[in-house]
Image (cartoon, rainbow over all chains, first blue to last red; front, side, top):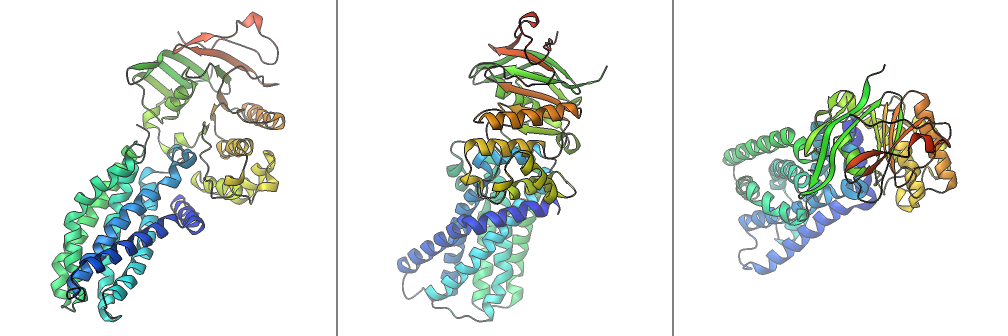
Length: 223
Length: 233
């Protein structure tokens, strides 16, 4: 088994036993959606725009919680040092941690979409399939950014506080594109109308993944 | 004469203007074993972390296999095994899963059988499928030793390898260290006080006030190992 596959397998195994990241993601998603459903004007809660906005708010907040948990297993018992000392290429470690974070976030997003449909009185129809690439691109970009930033902030005293302060503003351009593309998908607009927003999301995904690939080894260490 | 495996030149480390290591010079030759002793806060762990490349020195250089420790490539990292104060093990994985995981990271051909062999060597075969979270500190220390030596490294950096071990555990880990020396590995270990390794040829020095001093004088200490000065010039 390759080192890349070994890290993903280990992360999935730990998640299946502890379920901390996925449960935290789902719990935060549910909390945000419930609050927004009751806070927003009842006449508007059926709109695709509002549902899309609520979904992405839930996704970003839960993503921050999930990212904080993602590297906590590596900090326990100093396991991250074992990884740094091993022959594993830091870029491969980043790719594996990103892949694992993406899987957790995708699973949680699936749950959040179901909650969104139920809470906002939407229908389970083809528009949800059109939403899939938007959410996958969003999860990939946020996982890439959060994996890098959690590695950078995890060994600082205020790491848990620093992560959202850094991650959310940096993700805002992709967040706006994601909300717009999601709104278009849920309202049944033609695919072409989502094109520009999807291209922006792809661009930010490439940016975040490239930055993580290049910088991870410099931020994951001790000092 | 063999090339030094570990070499430091005027190595210094300062934390927030508090010097921990100061002008440390050391050469450890291939196949040699050395013990660094010193009290709490003497800088022993810092010294090993600098050699492993986990931290950057404030001044001076640390070389391992002739390479700067801050730029150790994967082929050199593969040749280093380290036991730290922390075990580097995952509490929610079993003993076997932990060793198999590290075996995969070190590209060991058959990590399953190698893990089984090492679990037997450290006396934990009965607990192979027990999660580390349920282990005692001593059992975790034994498994940490197995993890560090899994890939048969040519340099072992052992930070208080006998901490928390019972008599049997000390004997087991001692035997592993002696075995590593016999196959030609270099061993650099730390301890609060000198721990005798029967059958091992050791070089012992003391870390005090950020510097190495000879310990004990060669003529005063001849119980288990042979003491020679390791101090650099």
